[in-house]
Image 1 (cartoon, rainbow, N blue to C red):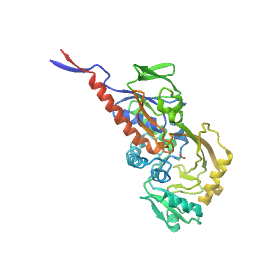
Image 2: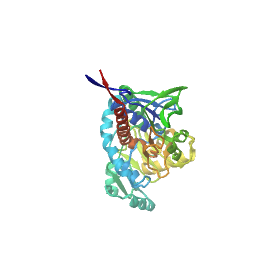
Image 3: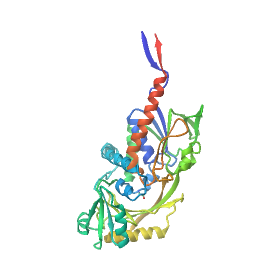
Image 4: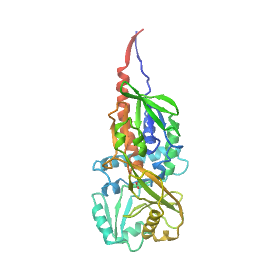
Length: 372
Ligand code: GLY
C-alpha cells in the first residue's frame, strides 16, 4: 500500500507583525482560510494605534480624486469597497457596539471662490455635481452660503473604534492568537530566510511573516522595504453629540467631518510629514474647529470632547507597498497612509492569496510517498 504524508506542518503558521487595521484584517483573512495566525502588537492593545486615531472613512472616491494617492489606487480601492459590504456583515456579530457601516457617499462643499476651483480639480468621472439646493437637501445642516458641492457616491464610513475590537474578536473566534505589548525584537533567520520572530523574550517559529507595522515600520531594520516608510502625523478632535446630524461624511478643503453611531462628530485632520510624536497643537485644533463650524454652523455650540493625534504610515508616493520582500519569507503590507481602513479587506485578500499559494507550493514539495 502507498500512503502520502506530509513531512511539513499541514497548517501554515503565519506571524503577523502589527495589530492595526491591516495586520488584523490580514490575520482574519488568513485564519478564515485555514492558516494558524499569531499577531504581534507592540502596543498594549491591538487596534489602538492609527486605526483608533483615524476617521474611519472609506473614501476611495475623494482620496483618489484629490490626488493624494497613486493612479493604481482607484481599482484597488474599488475592490476593497466591494469587499467592505461583505466584511461589515461578517464583523457585525463580533462588534461590541454598532459598527456604523454606511455607504451614503461623501460630500465636498464649496463656500468660496478658491473652494470652487478646488472642486473643479476633484471633478473626475463618477462624481456627481450638486447645486446648493441639492446639497442642502442631502445635508440640511450644511451652511446656507454653500455655492456648490460634489458627491462621491461610492464612499462610506464606519466607527473605527469599534472596528479594532470587532476584528480582534473575529480573529480569536477563528482560532487566531493576538499577543499584545509584544514588540518584535528581531526576526529569526534561517539560511537567509525569515523563519519566525523574537518577541516577549522568546522565539516564535513561523512558515511566513506578514509585515504590517504601520508607522513603526522603520524599526524593522531586517526588512529593507520598511525603511521607505515615514510617518505623517494627523491631529483630530471630536465634538459632543446633539448639535447636528450628518447623513454622510463631509470632505471639505480644510476639514472633514464624520459622525459616529453615538452621535459624536469627528473632525480632521492635519497632515504633518515626518512628525512622529502624538502631541496635539491647540492652534491646529482651533483651526479644525473653525472650519467645522463654517461648514456646519450648528456645531458652533458643540463642546470639544476629545483631541488626539495619530501617525499615518506613508511610502514615498503615498501608495501602499503590498507584495514579497527582498527578504525571503516576508510578505509586505506597508504604507497605507490615509487609507488603512478603506484598503484593509483588499489588502487582506491579496496577502492571504499570495501567502497561502506559496505555502501550498512549499508544503507540496515536502510531500513524500511513504511505502507501508
Ligand atoms: N483618512 C483621512 C486621514 O488620513 O486624515
